[in-house]
Image 1: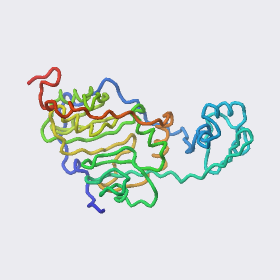
Image 2 (image 1 turned 90 degrees about the vertical axis):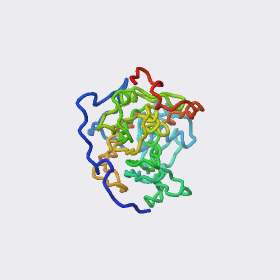
Image 3 (image 1 turned 180 degrees about the vertical axis):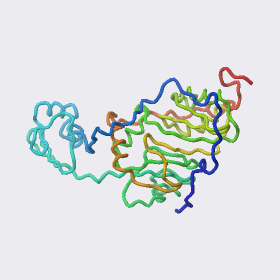
Image 4 (image 1 turned 135 degrees about the vertical axis):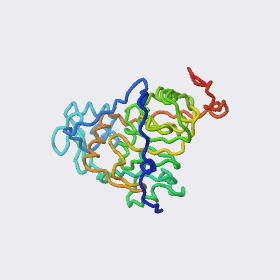
Length: 310
């Protein structure tokens, strides 16, 4: 499926200068994300205890004990806690040899997804991102981007990194540019920054920055279902254009609408550095919508929000 290459819809019409007052609104807490120190060398691989456990030898805890007892060797040398297993390594536990399986080379792609493409790897769904990319190897998306939204989407064959990036607790920021049908008030932007009730929970505090009368930037560290559209709807506004412009340190600079590219070695290094401390556990539990989310008076009712001036 080929789409015409064009610039971002936001870039097509320059934004007005933001007003001098109340430009940026911050929630109660800032993202913990920090730019990586590129001097830290991150090697791809799987942790030794996880590798031993995945081969059914023993649990991770027991593997750690074996490592501490100097009973584990990598390529003939005594292993230590924190060692990583690389493709082709020879591992032995108490003299029992385990052959390291060759893993496919990690692939990291960045797509500037156009509207109308569904961020699913299910090829039975028309307009899926796999058919759009026509990439020869098996890859999957890191998170998702709504069919009617555009912007950056990360794809990879590295499953561990996917879970680590998706965990909201790891505070990996994603920046969106939002255009509304009508102008929005400063107090509405401030309210969204503090957290909005939806889907049986409250959104995490975030950063919101005005661009012009009816447009703003919003930086999130979570990804609830249609979160930005629901947040805007809660304060009585309709989103007419939603574009993801940044995922962590990855931006859309130089990447045309509808195009994709491989991450550079430096970008991959930064990505692995950013998720190095994550346990890669399953992502946060998504709370399904309740009936009241759909049948209560719409968010356009100003009385629903605190400290409103009509």
